[in-house]
Amino acid sequence: MKKRKTLYYYLLYIIAKIRYRNTKIEYKEEIKEPSIFVVNHARIDGPTMMYLYFKRPAYFWVIHCALDEKLALNYAYHDVLLGDIRRHKGFYNFLAKRIAKSLPKLMKNSANCIPVYHDYRIKDTLNETIKALMNGYNAVIFAESPIDYSKYIANLQTGFVSIGNLYYRKTLKNIKFYPVYVSQKRKRILIGKPIEYNNENNLKEERNIINDYLVKNITDLALSLKKHKPITFLPSKWYLAYGKYANDVASYWKMIESGKREK
Image (tube, rainbow, N blue to C red; front, top):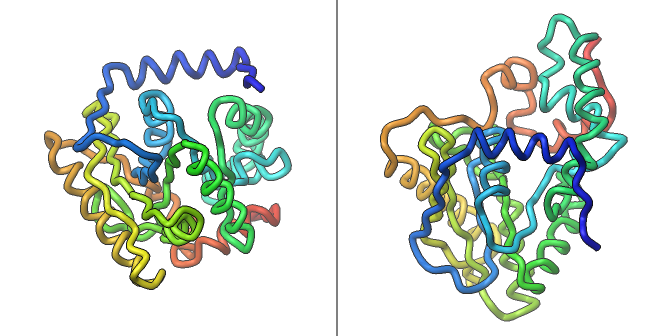
């Protein structure tokens, strides 16, 4: 069934097209089969630029709290507005309500989304991704952790590498993971050469190998552009408000699901 777009969607679409106008996408090699594209988040820039300019059929990984009408309020308050560090929490709670009212519907009606979980439900995320790949779609993933690798990309939360293992068991083929760097400043989306999942290694080894390859190559793609100030995955204020979760992302999302607020 075709997704219905709202007036709010079209307004945001116009704003985004203006902000990201003249963006060019560049591939280091021809892509012939469904693959995984691992992208620097750059806050809102990564998802938006990929949505606007990545024309291959794809499903996007999206944190489940942004898609759930019951959880969107706390997601907006904490993850979007960094509410725990704000002085005037009542005002930010008001803003969070405004965001939460439209965010889940906007996301679901705009793109093919796969909810991402950080607990046992990750199996649903992985299974939905395998289904999409086997139906000819690509997967666009934003997997950065709060721990930086370089000023252009953070080390990855490597659970997504399990896709390689599951895909091989289903198809006897090794899926490819492409490094992607987006820069709003330079109006570029650069898609580098991939690394292929190696089923002869154990999964733990592959997680390390693929993380190291992707973060290094995303950094190299960034350095191939003219000097520019990158947009980091998380703003510095996130670490002031939520730094205790930097090494425990699952607990961060559990806190948001719980509805917890600082008094």
